[in-house]
Amino acid sequence: MFCGSSDVIYIGSSTKWIIRMKLQIIELEKGKMRLNLEGEGHTFMNTLIEEILTDPEVDMAKYVIEFQFSDPELFITMKEGSKKDPAATVCEACIRISAKCDDLLGCLNN
Image (cartoon, rainbow, N blue to C red; front, side):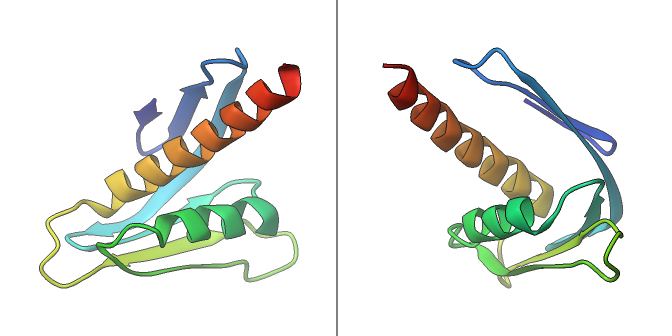
């Protein structure tokens, strides 16, 4: 998986699908991050927030969709004293979500 400032690409192990997301990092500081995820809606954002919040070093994670057709903006802050990078936290959450989807597809294909 590649996590960069413009694209996230994941090639699923069992699915052979390539998923590309456009994202824009608005703010990245020690312990906090704000980013836009182009074209995503409440379904993915709720899933992502729920998975990010399973990380014990995360203090707060939320998203806002300001207008009906605007892209969501994700906010994440780490607990005070955490040395973990918030961007890495988001990437790890995406990997866990993808693994859960791969497990489900594996069950359905058997």
